[in-house]
Structure formats: structure tokens, C-alpha cells
Amino acid sequence: MPAPLTTIQCRIRCASGPQTVYHFLAHAEGRAAFWAASAPEAEGCIHFRFPDGQTYIGRILEKLPDTLFRVLYFDTPLTFRLHPDGTGGTIVNVTHEDIPEADYAEVRAGWVSVLLALKAAADFGVDLRNHHPDRHWYTGFVDN
Figure 1 (tube, rainbow, N blue to C red):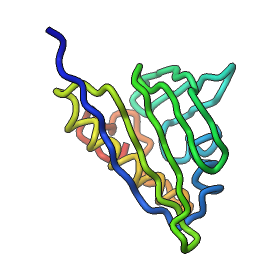
Figure 2: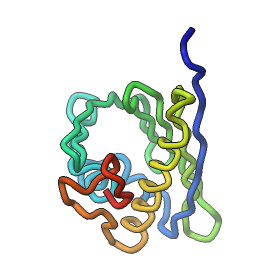
Figure 3: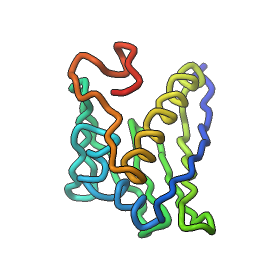
Figure 4: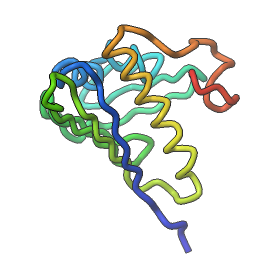
């Protein structure tokens, strides 16, 4: 019997507006500023390369400027919904579907790390990551 699947939902508020936050999600240089070592787009797919050397090609499922960005991420649907917060900032709602129940805690913690890195990059121009090939998530570092 296959393991039960779960959905992770989390959110963060960025002081930056939806246009700025969307840029970090939908453009290679934005993704490389907080999410992956590099993440160029070609033929509707994002070619992720992570600090530990791992790679993944994720198909872009949907893009609505300043509002929605969906990608197949490690074979599971990942959605970012952006909403103006009424004060010039953005509420970023993340939904990551079809996560094996056994991986839920680790994947949710990973999104906390990634979303805080997004906030730092979008709001303050700061890269929280350490950029060391041996200091990554799988060796216990949360600052990838």
C-alpha cells in the first residue's frame, strides 16, 4: 500500500510588492538569489542546480505575472500565490502537494528556510545562504 500523501501550506509576508516578489520566483536571477545556486529557464522548464550539486528539471505549470507561479518540483505540484497585503507588501502563500507523509516535517522545514531566504533577498537584498558545497540541508545546515 502506498504511503499517504499530504499537502504543505505555509505563508510569509514580504515588505516588497507583488511585482518584486514575482520577479524572484519567475526569473533565473531571482531564483538564484534565494532558492538555488542557479535556476535558468529553457523550453518551459526550470533547470535547478542546488548548493549540494543536486539538479532537478521542473516543468512550469502556470505563470500569472505578480499573482501566481506554479511548477512541478521534484515531481510534485508547487504553487506560489501572491496577494497584496494592503500596505505595499505581499502575502506569499505556498502550497506544495503530494508530499509523502514520512517527508512532511523535513519538506515543511525546508520551505521555512527557503521562504525566509526569499524575504531577505526581496526585502533587503541579502543572501542568507552560505554557498559552501559541503554546508547544505543534507549536512544539517539551514543556510544552504
